[in-house]
Length: 475
Ligand SMILES: C[S@@+](CC[C@H](N)C(=O)[O-])C[C@H]1O[C@@H](n2cnc3c(N)ncnc32)[C@H](O)[C@@H]1O
Image 1 (cartoon, rainbow, N blue to C red):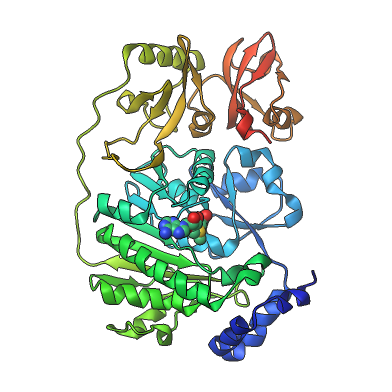
Image 2 (cartoon, rainbow, N blue to C red):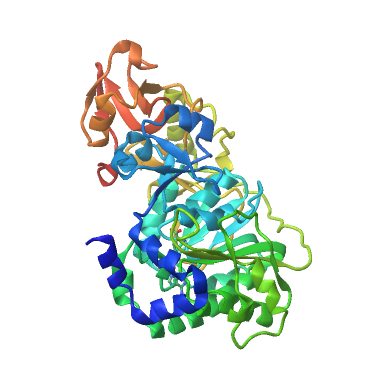
């Protein structure tokens, strides 16, 4: 389909509304559909700095000016095929979609909720910013989408996380005034993504936006109720529809007078929210809506988005938890100790290993959140990090453990260059020949690394590395 054909697929009522919204800018907006879309990559700063990534990157990068750790890349570079992707060094994300997580200021130790998180484009950014301090609850109502979310968080090596597939109402009941940072990237009509995904334009109807607006209003109230006084909530959509954007913001401000809009770090391409779209619920100064941000594809190298940053008035202290004092049973401790001695474990993700966080369920060993949460009745896919499995009298490590390890955490590594074809063969599940000077130990469990960044485990026997990369992760 040519680019001018693309314009022909845009629904007429949508175009009429955009013409009214944009006035003199409408022609430039329409013309932007003739431009190719841009491609973005966001560096996992929990694993390496942007400078380190720039020095390593095999593809040409150009910084995204409004995202501190974001880069444009050329479509032909195919960064998903590079082993650094399997090592969790970056996430591929449309550049505008990087904006919401980047405008929610995460501090070490924050309790963060991403309410509609799958597949994890924003949750991975929030988790990396927390860098295993505090904790991240990443939720999605859809179980299958929550599985993809879990995989992406595991790829990023995040430990302090709870991944749930719950109804927001249930979470709101269990966690009132609990989190101090919340991202609500709401389900929306996706008008901002019409250039990227034509199917969205084909399925669009004005009635859908009205239905979604009701859902968004419900979700934003639930999110506000889970926010602690003094905490911040970022609401975002990838649509231009006023009933899903300013109208939802106005609704929250009217229903919850303790919520206020605040300015977010700006960028020259951002456009202000529109006071006239406040809708019926305008029991506040609608000029405040100018603090919202609209992203238009004719003003920036990205697709359409909407963002609003709120603060809950007042102040509060973080919840206090009793510390965990349980730890694993004697045998689990022994088998884990033996494995850790074999690989020479010093730290886990740069932090001291905390035995109190270890718990076994059905022969699976987990490294829980650092404090106990009451999860009775809450449906979750993961609490913390899945460390591995108890087999007959021994422990076998998991892939998420491999990805949660940092350079320097363990002794038993084999580090090959990313361009060494053995890394690609490993990712396909093949066994490898390893020279004696390439491995830290003569035999046993090793962590295979690409330029020092963990990719997965293998077991060395007589110069052959038996592949332990799980079938479900292979490329
Ligand atoms: C815009 S997408 C989220 C994208 C995600 N934040 C990211 O950056 O990768 C919206 C998500 O909301 C989920 N969703 C839809 N209705 C929901 C509801 N009532 N409660 C929670 N999540 C919901 C959908 O399954 C979908 O994954």
